[in-house]
Length: 167
Image 1 (cartoon, rainbow, N blue to C red):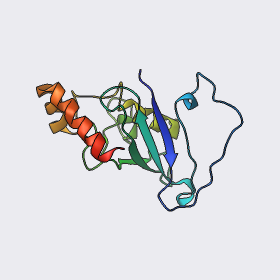
Image 2: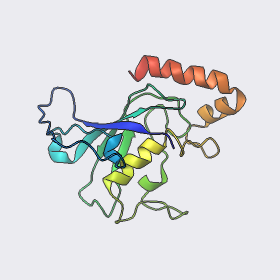
Image 3: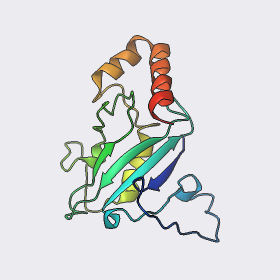
Image 4: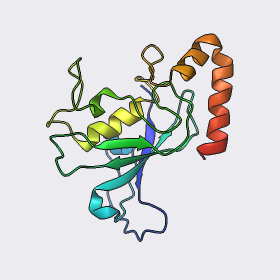
């Protein structure tokens, strides 16, 4: 499975406080490839996660996801929207995301449950760029059909979107 770095960021212009740790991350922990920046954004109920894939079609891109944690969390899932324009079969160009763990009710049993955490959301978003990249059950049908029709042209369009929107 590929790994991506994930950073938690606040909105531009919002004062921030970045804690530091004198200890290096454990080599087998998520923090070995996840980096977090803590900002004071709406009292931690709204944050921006930044996913930086290091392999595959989306390598080199910086994709930001706004995550709103509702008052009823963890009985209901957080609301997540992709803020970066992207050409992806499971994310629309307007930012809607198809990720089963973000569904309150799921037929396949992989939807949100009170036992899930924000860590699961981070892992799920990271997986959208690796093992959960799904061309067979797309939200963005046009992107999935493009991939089936011409994989090289699909890759070129993804790279163009990264250059234009995800740097």
